[in-house]
Image 1 (cartoon, helix red, strand yellow):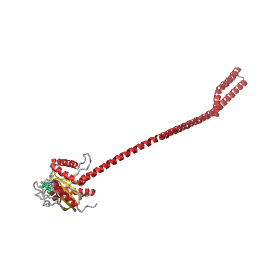
Image 2 (cartoon, rainbow, N blue to C red; image 1 turned 180 degrees about the horizontal axis):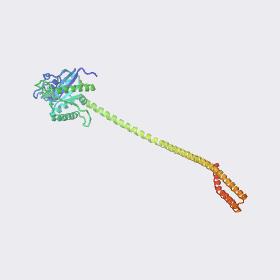
Image 3 (cartoon, helix red, strand yellow; image 1 turned 60 degrees about the vertical axis):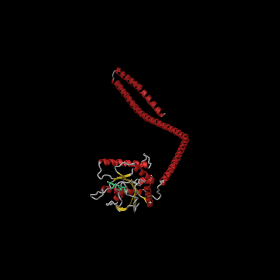
Image 4 (cartoon, rainbow, N blue to C red; image 1 turned 120 degrees about the vertical axis):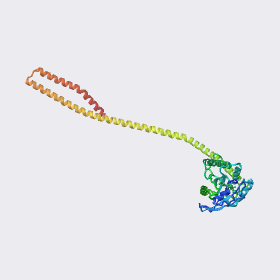
Length: 384
Ligand SMILES: Nc1nc2c(ncn2[C@@H]2O[C@H](COP(=O)(O)OP(=O)(O)O)[C@@H](O)[C@H]2O)c(=O)[nH]1
Ligand SMILES: [Mg+2]
């Protein structure tokens, strides 16, 4: 959104807060005479007044309102004047509320704020407002800085009360500024720090206005009927919201009930499926086990086959060696016997050898028998 051609700003606050001097200050009216500034108790502003000027290439109209609790003490009269005035303007963009720094917020001021609460809705007020505390020392002391923080807190609490905003409802704090608009008579200048504060406020205001529409002032009225209607509308909306909420809750409950019902219906089916799955898993496990066992058996048999084959092989080798060696010994003994007989060695010696031969053969035969038997048995198992 483009910047507006003219920003219309309402300046409100109790008499003596410094509204007229503020309007001179924002337009750097160093004569401080465009808006007649009050001297003494009586208010000098008779009725609302327009202040159109240009600052930093932007056009403004600061509307200096009459204080509603001025020395005439006629709140309604001043309120009438203000409403008539802003009705003619059709819309305003912003509200600056001026209060004196360092002074307790009096009951009079509270009444003034309550009157504002009859003109603006809380929504309008909170989205278009900033607060200025005037007469803030140009060289603030420690106590002034402490009071500044307290003041911010206090004004936020008071406004919440006036606009009936629950304490626990979180709304952003209103923007609060501290200035001194008094001319330094020796130097004939305004406090520059305070002028900078005005520039900051104007920038902030432009941002706020981009977010929020202007306040339409055409339907403003003195009786507070507009606000009452708004409140009634809010009540109707609240009721509707409450009914909607109840309806939704009932729907949610019904949904939950149906879901539970469905769950119940589903349960036996799920259980059956689970049982089937369990059985399937068990069967699968058995099959796996069997397969594993068979594999073990196969491995065992294979092991045996190779075992037996090697035993049989050894046996054959062993048997051949044994037969060969016994044949050799028999042949050797026979030769010895033959030689001994022919050479005429004594018969005693011959006999001893012959007996030795027979005995040795006997012993060999006895030793070889179980071995042969075992070999035979193994070969038979293998064949089976
Ligand atoms: N020191 C000082 N005096 C101020 C300031 N603002 C207003 N005044 C004085 O307070 C008195 C009332 O100011 P005025 O603008 O007429 O208040 P209005 O009734 O709200 O319009 C005048 O004497 C001003 O000079 C301020 O910021 N600092
Ligand atoms: Mg004034």
